Length: 97
Image (cartoon, rainbow, N blue to C red; front, side):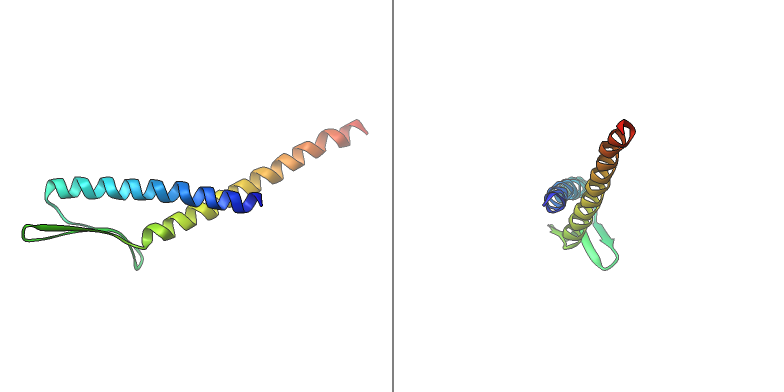
């Protein structure tokens, strides 16, 4: 249950952070009148395109992939910390004997 909670919380936290960074980058590029196209492999993170007087912004599925990877990393770190805490809890018991 702890691993699932760590996965969910990590996914939400990294997803919100990735979206905020992508949105800030898109706003900066739009204000400057430029074009932005950020990909991770075949997955689009954010794309800002300009066609005449119209500017369009697209947040792609790459943000979901980044969020999922962040959640997996958080779950792995939580499992590692829990394992280390269990080891440390056992060490004093073995010394007392």
